Image 1 (cartoon, rainbow, N blue to C red):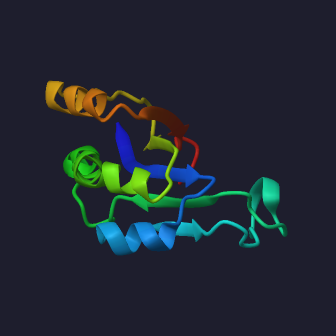
Image 2: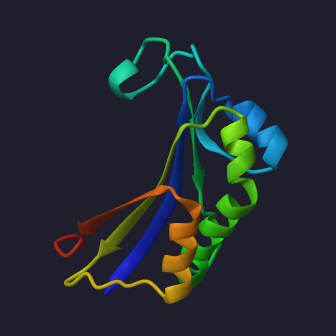
Image 3: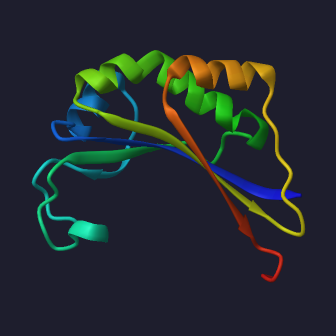
Length: 132
């Protein structure tokens, strides 16, 4: 039983500008850092980052069964512009938070659409069985 699905897209590049990407695409990005900004966390914590980075996250109000296609469609429409704004590393992250057992699958439409995007896709599963 999957209790929650969180999806996001990592956008990163030496010349990537999250601000420009938001202006060009109309997407709302999270965890934005422009090239040279001081990072509040991670490997460059307290230091200027040598790249621009941001995440595109699926809004919480999107129903579970529509989340993957929401992010796929957002990329289908905007990926070219994101690359033009300097994005180099683009990867979809799926986090499945489950209790007792983790089963998931993809429809033919989802698999076909992901393949057409030509981006990396990473899946992590988090067992929440011991949590109340």
